[in-house]
Amino acid sequence: MIYTKTGDNGTTSLVGGRRVKKYNQRVEAYGTVDELNAHIGMLATMMRDKSIDLEMAFDVREQFENCYKQLKTAQNKLFVIQTLLATEDEDTYNKLPQLDDNATDEMEAWIDDIDKRLPALKSFVIPGGTTISAQAHIARTVCRRAERQIVRLAEEENIEEKIKKYINRTSDYLFVISRFALILENKAENFWSAE
Image 1 (cartoon, rainbow, N blue to C red):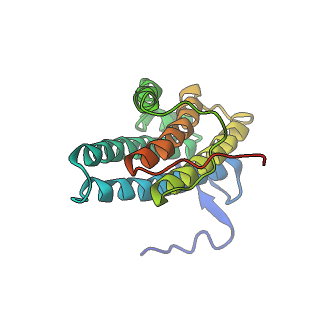
Image 2 (image 1 turned 90 degrees about the vertical axis):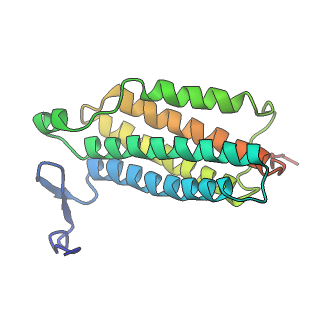
């Protein structure tokens, strides 16, 4: 059955079985990463659709396919992070799949590769321009919220530095993806102006 009724009283189970309130800081942290993962799933699907759009140039489709593959890799790593954040028992934690030590390095390589294709920033970017770019910004802002939740949790619990770094770098990656998508779709960026 999809429903267990065990959460009807406002509690949920952590990995290991301990029940906590649904607003518990650990639940807020892994729940926000789950939300982020869902938004990235939408972004990846949009990228995949572009990668098979025969009306687009082959090299552009290749770039969308590459971004799609990166996003799918990130989703798998975020699922590992969700599980680790949902686990407070150290013995159980150590038996779970772990975030690769080089995960952040991999993300930084993706960022550097995309960033060198982007024009220098001279102002703040206003989200939008295309649905893909807008979705990347939505994912980016949810990622920032996930980061805040994880930092808050880290004040009370032992959270690995590599988890915090990966989440931080994921928001940077989503930002460059939002800009790159506009270039791939030949759309102008919308920059903030005080006027």
